[in-house]
Length: 227
Length: 301
Image 1 (tube, chains in turn red, cyan):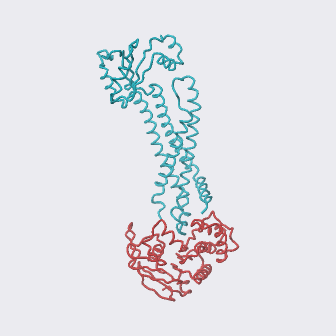
Image 2 (cartoon, chains in turn red, green):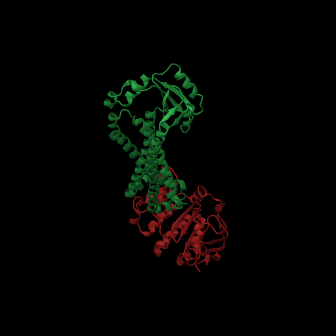
Image 3 (cartoon, helix red, strand yellow):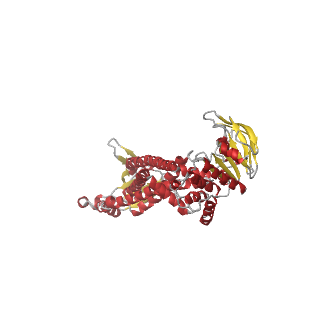
């Protein structure tokens, strides 16, 4: 599903090497933790998968597509429709309700209204927010906001879910709830890649762990722990 | 995807950017108004030249009375010249009639003019006004010490060359027209920059939405179109005001003059209508250029 082959990334502006000859293979339906200290290259890896950045060298494949061959006008948008993204800061629109936030993700890729009206309540029910459709983000707890963000990422039924520190702003109990939800999303066949600092979570989940340090893979362990 | 979604976003964008959008619209309005004005001035100049000269560049006045065969003989000399497009004979009666029309609002001039004093003439149209010397040469004319034109050909009293006058006239009027056009172009550039600026500010205000749109796989077009429409709306609002003000200006300033200067044809509604498509094209041009400039680099995926 995801393949990085000898990928290096150097940011031309400051000359920092974020990734140095990294090769990773992730199969369909896997759940993978990317761990490592700040600046180890976790976020850069995720950015390469959505073509927000191009590698300096090496090839990146997602769902069989070589990302360097995608056109910005149609290939990249299509790629991103197959990838859901979740972030530490939720990235919700404060002037839209829960329903509208999730619907926005479908509207802007041209889904018709009847699809939106069936899928949005469905996914919000799935993430456990069936009763908060008309609330605004600032009326929700952090965990609930992250659920909205996960609902938006999953509403178009992506093949891959990328999560960049999704529990970074949440307390331990809420984090566990969010992990249960991500696990549930993974169980229905979605490949999940999660970059995290959260040792307790990684240790509790016992999933595959890929550890990065200074832009290189230093450990790749199935059913691993944080360190 | 729904048209109403685009329109809704455009409306939100315009409202959020109130003052800046207003500035862009006003500048578009002034630019397009001046642009239309320069076109109308050009049109008025054409009308004026046409009325004043009847498109005749050289008039050959004939000695009075005109002897039989003179008209045919002189026409025979002039018509074969490569510089000459056509030669028309104007009789004394016709000449007086034209004089009456020209000075219709100056009865004293008419009273004091003997109908007999206005000579018959040959009215010569040229292929190329700069070659009027061919006509004077063929008639054996030359300018004497007191700046009068004396002609050798029999039956010719005087040759009057409008081209020098026309040249002077059109230098002045063209200068005026070009001056307004240059001003209009400067304003058009200002309008493009201001519209581009509103788009930029709009994109900055909506950078979070734009980020999410990219994230979920909206195409470049889907992201840009609302901003393009916003720019187009601003330019077109400016264009509408420009058209309205030009029409009003015609009614308020030009129409009252129609009575007092009957000899001069003034621009009519049809002329103002003729300018509208050009103003609209210029408005679309502002929007497209502003969109290209405003969105460059900002929105690349």
